[in-house]
Length: 254
Ligand SMILES: [Mg+2]
Ligand SMILES: [Zn+2]
Image (tube, rainbow, N blue to C red):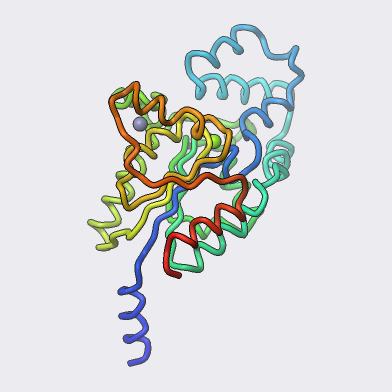
């Protein structure tokens, strides 16, 4: 009877969703550029550098091939990734939210291998309901193989390989359809230009959480205006995991 009652009470508690970007949000650097810096700059040919302007996924696949040719082993790459520092206080922020009726997801243009390795090293893997990112794995030769998450042309605010806004909307609808979960508030936490699309899809009940003085914070109003869109969500501006956590908690009744 007790378990039935507590289960019943749990269901009636408001549920929240916090969606996190990874690079420069959860971790205080860019996983792709940190791993690319294992190569000497002179070892990256101009034709590979030029790929970075047309498609980031193709560029990173070329970088991973160069790392393989340079005999930089998977263990060294993993070590490099897991040693990237968290954005101060972010692990505590995530753990506290998770313990307080928040579902957590990641939506990132990094890749599944880096995110899994870093989350495993920080005991976070099981805290996330879903990770939306480019699938990657080390193949039998030890080369990191990367695929785009999708190829989309519907959203011109997002890269062709991942519309973060669509991923966020899909997660929210699926939770409603599969589990009858409706979120009281959605918090989207990010720093970059590719975090503007999901923020602009949030409703008035939700919160766009922007890292102060990073591109999302500096450019969101202009991008919205240029695309005849409005930011409906309320905003939280943050500098680290602890002030972010305090701001989120102040918006809800824990
Ligand atoms: Mg980012
Ligand atoms: Zn988009």
